[in-house]
Length: 121
Image (cartoon, rainbow, N blue to C red; front, side, top):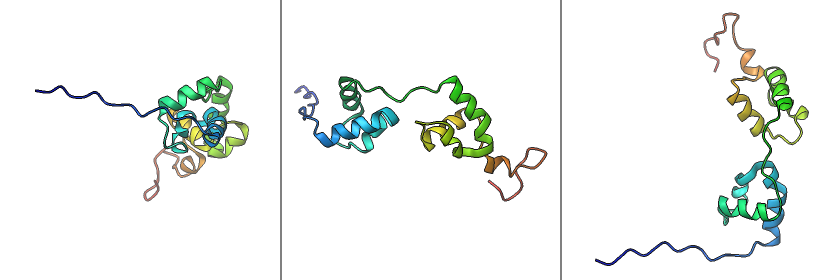
């Protein structure tokens, strides 16, 4: 019985100027999710190169940002983005969902009993 060969790794490929520019612009905003813009790079390669360039991943939510989200998201939905510079619509919606917040369009459809009327999502 012959032993299985170990998987081979791709040879290291230099980062080109376009990839580095994408990384500098997008990594601080979306982290390794910028892999969709860099299909030939793995998340590990993206993190390593970003670290080598001194780039920081997206920052955690501060208590002030969370307070704004609690206060404004139920009233304005993702329109509160103007009050949260550096946060995209997706990040706002995901964080609001994690906090159990619903945007105004959903809360406006609820009846006084707290139930959603028939036919409304």
